[in-house]
Amino acid sequence: MKFLITGGAGFIGSHLAEALLNQKHEVFIIDNLSTGRLSNLDHIINNKKLHCCIDDILNKSVLNNLVKKSDIVVHIAAAVGVKYIIDNPLLSLETNLVGTQNVLYSANEYKKLVFLASTSEIYGKNSKELLHEDDDRILGTTRISRWGYSTSKAVDECLALAYSREKKLPIIIGRFFNTVGPRQSERYGMVIPRFIKQALLGHPITVYGDGRQSRCFSYVLDIVDAIIGLINCPKAKSEIFNIGNTEEITIEKLAQKIKAIVKSDSDIVYMPYNKAYEEGFEDMRKRKPDISKLKKYINFKPKYNLEAILKNTIECFKA
Ligand code: UDP
Image 1 (cartoon, protein in one colour):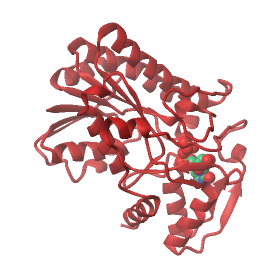
Image 2 (cartoon, protein in one colour; image 1 turned 180 degrees about the vertical axis):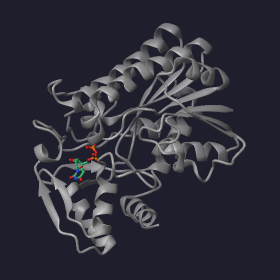
Image 3 (cartoon, helix red, strand yellow; image 1 turned 45 degrees about the vertical axis):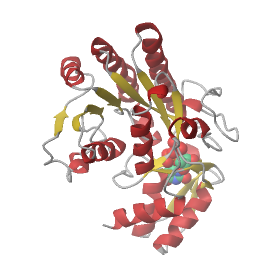
Image 4 (cartoon, protein in one colour; image 1 turned 60 degrees about the horizontal axis):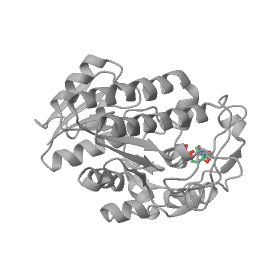
């Protein structure tokens, strides 16, 4: 099969490209290298079945050509990281809204299956015990960039669902929860790469807020397995899936754990959200996915627990 991965030089996209090439598929990548890096593809760049196009999904004709050549489109290109979104609100919205519209428009021209990478940011401040795919989205004011981002990803989902209903375009929506692993940069604000880097350098480990907010982290290879599993599952068409892990940890405990694994002398310091992000910033107290639907459809079970995720990621950072 021929796959097009938008954002294929990014953290998740590059791992997916590698897995698909290992399965002998042909892979086209389009990436503008805004947050992706060519070095993410170093180990596969000489594979004859990989075709890289350094361009933007806002460039309709280039995108259209690539979609035409492919059988399946995995649309991952999007702004990443809460910090990045706050620093680049306009570009983030444009990529999510116009970029996704372009991808769906082209895919519909040739009726190609689209896997749309969405996000748990969709749920906003809904901090219920387990977030189910049909749960309410609870968002704050549009003045906060995070909620603008959440809204833009929700519009992406709505567009994909509308294409599916009205135009019979085959689509699958996957909502990624916090994902970590090798090649994730600390530059865009994600907590685990930041804590690892701080711990390795002996710098203060910066816990935002009171540190009692919790998250569930997934290893990128589990996420890649889920994407491929869903693409190969005929019943998954037109459906939305949470993709994540259910092992939960508070950010304060995460800092202590990383400090211990690294055997770091770093202090753990607390920083108010307003200072870390922007005035009025709002965080979710908890974000845990209900993954029973993913289990039901593709028998998904994460292979990596938090201990393994942290050890593997720390080793890669050291290297
Ligand atoms: N966080 C933190 N210190 C950092 C970076 C992030 O305490 O240096 C916190 C952040 O406020 C959030 C959690 O860690 O509560 C996860 O942040 P991340 O940006 O990785 O993901 P998200 O907020 O999207 O869940």
